[in-house]
Amino acid sequence: MSEALEQITGHRGRGVVVRGNDIDTDVIMPARFLKTVTFAGLEENVFRDVRFGPDGERRDHPFDRPAFQGASILVVNSGFGCGSSREHAPQGLRRWGIRALIGESFSEIFFGNCVSIGLPAVTAAPADVARLMDAVEGDPAAELELDLESLRLTGPAGSIDVAMPEGARTRLLQGHWDALGLLLSKSERIHATADALPYVRGF
Image (cartoon, rainbow, N blue to C red; front, side, top):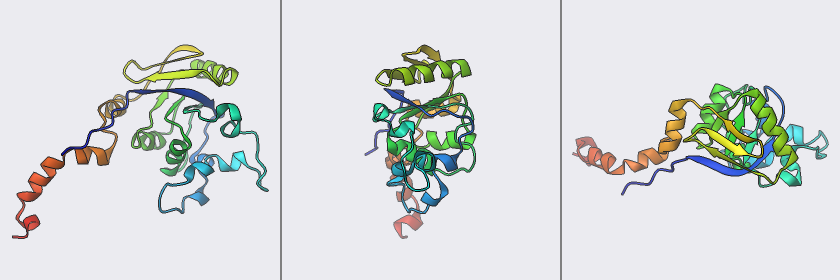
């Protein structure tokens, strides 16, 4: 029996702002935390070196402020996710609770790694992102709603036009972002093909 594909049409949730251009993947997920066999527990080390000082003292970072706990839409500036291609960066963000990102621009590889785990990353004009950041920081309890079908984000900053490469948007909307899920959805065809192959049947 085929597995159902998870179609992602958008997300509704509260926002959290991380300001700064060209925040690279080593800032998002420092290299020393890439030694694990699985991605489990990565959420504890997201932005580790800017959240904690050298002696372990906690710094004032948005991911630790009480007002932003439970936030699920990350708002960033330009060049977010540049640097190395590590998949651990979007994995850590997702496991922390992020379900969508909006920014001025994203590294191409980081963007691809986000889409491959069902994490929409959309862009908007710098002026709109600046206005959204101010609105989210001014009212952390306000909800944002991202609609991938209409390519709009609504919330305390009003309605904002967002953009996303059409191929990636289609993969999310149709559920084709999940390579394993897509494979399982074709299980009948896979088994039929396998049954027709002599070397699989053992003949």
